[in-house]
Image (cartoon, rainbow, N blue to C red; front, side):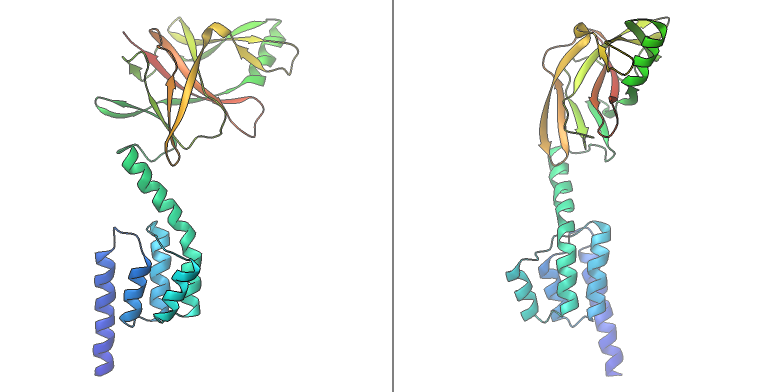
Length: 256
C-alpha cells in the first residue's frame, strides 16, 4: 500500500511539474527539483529528451553545474543526458531573441515586408544565369529579356525606401535590387551576355540598386535600398551557394 502511495505521489508530482513548465525551458533547477522528489532516473532522462524535442531547453552543462547536480544525487546517465541536451538550448535562446526583436515575423525562411495589414511574404523565383547566357549566345545576341511573370508583383509597396526582413539567409553574399521592365502585361528582366557561351549573364548597370544588410537578431536581417526607389517593378536578389551563378530573387513593386 505504501509503495502504491509513493508511486501515485511521484506520478502526480511529475505531471504537475510538467504542467507548470510546459511553456518554459527545462533548467538545472527543475532537474534538481525532480531529484529531490525522488523521480526515477528513466523519468528524468525522458523529461530531458522531451524538452529537447519540444525545443524548450536552457540547461547548464559546465563543470560546476554538473558537479552541483551530482551532489544533488544525479546519476551518470542523467549527467550525460544534461551534457547531451545543453547545446540544443542555443536554438531556444536564439528563437527567444528573434521573437523579442521582431514580434510576429513568420517562421518560414524568406523575405518579408511589414505592411499595415500585417506581414507579407515576397514571391520567390530562381534565375540560373548560365542558362540565360546560353540562350543569348545561341541566338547571337548580346542582350535579351527574361519573362518573370505578370505585369505587376503580388506585393505593391508605397514606401520609396522600404525595409525588408530576411529570415535565415542562404549565403553571406551581398544583395542587390534590380529594376525590371514591362511589356505585353509581363515583367521583363533585361540581361546582357558578356563573352562566350559559359560566361555569367550580367544585368545592365542602370538597373541595379545597392542594398544595406543589417543583422537584427539571430538569423534575422534587414535589407534596405541605400537610396529611394522610383515607382516600378523590382527583384531583390542574392547568389545561392553550391550552384554556378544561381540567383535567388524576390519580387515586389513600388507605387506612388
